[in-house]
Length: 264
Image 1 (cartoon, rainbow, N blue to C red):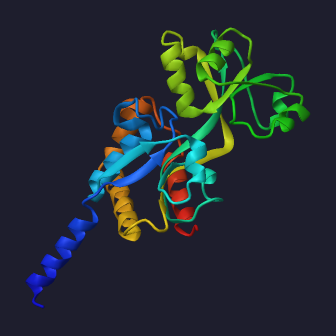
Image 2 (cartoon, rainbow, N blue to C red; image 1 turned 30 degrees about the vertical axis):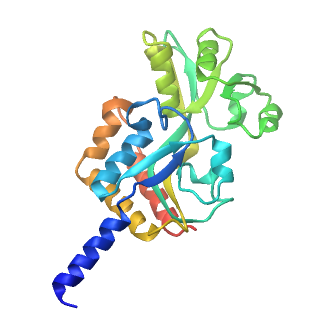
Image 3 (tube, one colour; image 1 turned 120 degrees about the horizontal axis):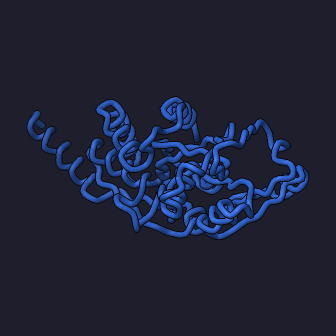
């Protein structure tokens, strides 16, 4: 077989491999993932940019989190912790991070809030989204009142009215909820990032997905490319972190990347 034939064979094989979009699954969790938002949310915008830079087409489909966890033969988007116990992945590619913060309301900016451990919250009323706190007993043992709700808007309204002292929420979710619900009072809501609460947001590719190794490599190359050319930072600042992202964003992203290069 001559060189031209070999090239044409390779080209046709590659074209066939990537003719169909890569199907990735997420659950509705705005602003990270949502079919109601531009580019399917923050994570969706990153996936889109990474895919274009890596020469892939990705399609995000939305399903309930419980269904995603129970389906052990799909590609997932989100926090690997929710999925790894039930499914084996050929590749886990962190593309962003999230961090939990304690939000409080301080109209006069006179409160001196310090937080080093859970015991520092003794006697306070903490609000959290239903289903996000798995160990309520731990709070009770520390003398902390924990109140849950099915909506972030409800929690932050209670915080603004003084019915809660703090709201426990992912940083970006909290910022977006405040901007949407209290646009004129955003500066009165302050946040304390919780230590050791940083988690990865990742593309997880099932071990049996067709041509998974090539696809994973293209996602990795696409991510590296948009970080180097500034597109990644542009996405962060344009709609999601107009002030600035968390200080250790890229350091934490690199740490999770190295961790999941050897996992599973």
